[in-house]
Amino acid sequence: MRKNTITSIDKEFFDSSRDTLKRIEIIHNDVERFPFEELSSFSKLEYINLKYNSIKRIPDEAFGTVVNDKIKQIDLSFNKINHVGSNAFKYLTKVEKIDLRYNKLTVINNLAFSALYENSKLILHLGCNKIMFVSEDAFQNQVFKSLNLTDNNLTTLQERAFRGILKKNG
Image (tube, rainbow, N blue to C red; front, top):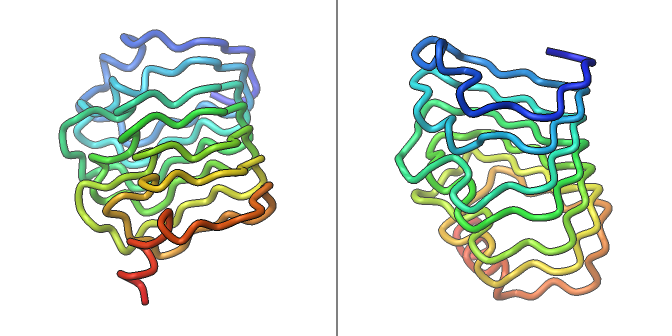
């Protein structure tokens, strides 16, 4: 669904394809809220693309509290996201790419990108936001293939915020 004026998605919208849906692409719309928590029950879902919308928040435990080893890529770039909740992606144990470029993030909150298990395949794009501060436990138990913080408002990098990453990759 591209280039429409969709503003919201009901949590029941995808129910009929819960056991078969592999990709969700809702691009260039006006979606402000999305039922992320419903996605944890989609047994075959691998790819989520919601770029160029108006999403403002990713809630705590957005993708549920049950291990999901199917979702591989999430593109939320070019939205209006200003908050990523605690453990938002924690249970996505096989995710390889999360793209949050060109949003309105100013702070990376505690546990926002925490992981249940180390995932050395994860590429996390946080470039082109307005990030000024990264909380100490923002990346708890996380290992990255690549972490991109290019073009933000960071003036100081606190070692304790990156300690786990540096230790594991060093």
